Length: 130
Image (cartoon, rainbow, N blue to C red; front, side):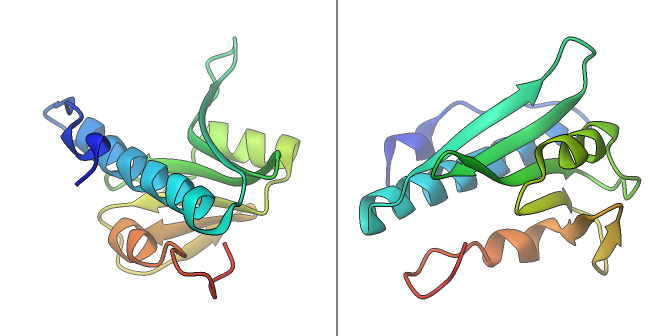
């Protein structure tokens, strides 16, 4: 159990805040684990510009944008912010992770993936390439 497991969680009727908190906690554990276990340099950020385009999570590896991640409950329409920043930042991968999604999709170079399966496959071991 870590300190991050005890963080207060925001709640809303749609469940969006809970999903974002779940992903934030998982990504924070992932980045810290990879740093501690393998000495890799990872960062976790949020991105929003003055035009209100946003991406829920920006994960960097060695100072470069590795993942752009948007979290949705059931929306398979590609997030405008994710599409914009995918084109601008050219990350290794752009992911819209959706709780209620039966099969993976791809739109405009962004993967739309089932949330649970995506979280299960975060590469925590040394043999997995992130």
